[in-house]
Amino acid sequence: MAIDSAYRGSAFSEHGLRRVLIGVAASALVVLVALVAAVLLLSGATLAGDATALARVSVGPLGGKIERVQAFGPGGRPLALAIERGRLTPLRRLTPGEQVSVDVQIRRPGWIGWALGSEHNERLTVRAPVARVTQQWMTVSAGSDVRVSFDQPVSAIAYGSNGSLTHHARGDGAKSVSLGRQPATGATEIAAAARPWEKVGAPMQVSWFPPSRSPVMASIPAAGSQIAPATSIYLTFSKPVGEVLGSSHPSVSPHTPGHWRELDSHTLEFTPSGFGAPLDSRLRIQLPSPVAVTAGAGGLRTTSQVEWTVPPGSTMRLQQLLAETGYLPVDWHPSGGTVAHTPSAQAQAAVDPPSGSFTWRYANTPHQLQALWSPGQWNLVTKGAVMKFENSNEMTVDGVAGPAVWQALLNYVLAGKRLHEAYSYVYVHREIPETMTLWSAGRTVETSPANTGISGAETELGTFPVFEHIPEGTMSGTNPDGSHYEDPGIKWISYFNGGDALHNFDRSSFGTPQSLGCVELPLEAAAEEWPYTTIGTLVTIET
Image 1: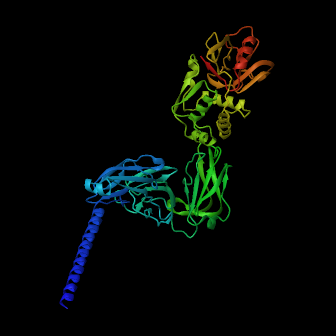
Image 2: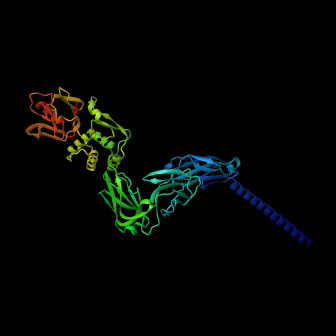
Image 3: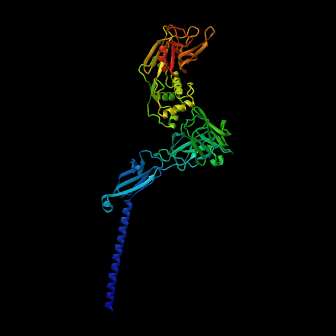
């Protein structure tokens, strides 16, 4: 029994020792695992989004130091970042919604680096936040500010119309912004930036309406304002388009090529095509059903028609085009790029001309002609060029640059046409001996003795464009004594002022007042002068 007890005790001691050793080993393993876990935790790094910055990087106490941060925008374009307290902020303004990839490389301390690797990399793809308008169509009581709300705080806004937005920085980071007191009915385009390091995003139209039982309409540009020929028109209704207008679209007059489309449930857009609305016109839109629009003193009136004013083409642009096409004695030199050869671009330039300068085409242009020219102002040189253009293009010759002339001139330019006739000019001296001088394309073609009007029928001083050009005709009128005359077979006639004309007349002498107001020339001189004095040619009568 004693032997058995001793044996049992020995076995128990060995078993207990094993259990102790296993326990110690297990404890050591637990400590080791905990130590490794702690090391991993304390040596870790995270890269995540941030409420104010583009992203935030956090490095554990044992994680080491940030060795490199790289960011790339669309197309792999590098993006410089500022790092402050782990926050990563772009050094150039991002577009809302722009996607950015961020790579962070961290170098671990020596002993941890030996165990876990010397480098740790984190990658994050983020998008710049987009602040969106929460309510596009608002009812605003009279006298109240127009307030626009966004789905998140904004740091900057820009608003206006026709793409011309005024920027406003905001430091309060509020979700709602005030546009101040506005007309009772109105619309604007508004864009916002959610973060200070962003640009404002794409604009969204917001509209506001006064309380009304009838559907209310706001327009951009405002009804009654002046617009360019190719300006798009937006009509926004307080109720859905289909509910207000049914299935019909408005009509446009005078006829303007273009198309309608629904931008959203409340908004119609008319986009002109070609040259757009005619210059110097009142563009009217006729609605299928009446709506309420703003009237005087903030009230409303019910109507089914709204209109805008399209300005006439500018004199400056008219001169630029006439110079480009060879109808003026000057050349045009734009200071920037040339206007695109598209109908819409040419129509826009007609009311908003590009900058540049004019130079004389010929080195020895007569001073009398130079004195008549004034860039940007209507003058006789311009009128003569318009008359010549009208005549060359089989239009009624009146020297007025109305819508028909502009339409023809713009088509002429787009077709790449140019007048190949030399520019000519005539000046007549009434000082005895009276002379007629014909100048063309930089040279004096001829100087001839001439006869002007006698006392009581003097040839009027001034400059006049030729308005009728015939090789032979009958000239008639009234003599100073009241008697009537009629002279058939008069050759080489160029009428320039009422019944006054350059023409041949058989006289025994020339160089003194002998006519009844015309400028009489010898046959040979008249025959040589006549081909140059086509319709629109300027004739100056001077002392």
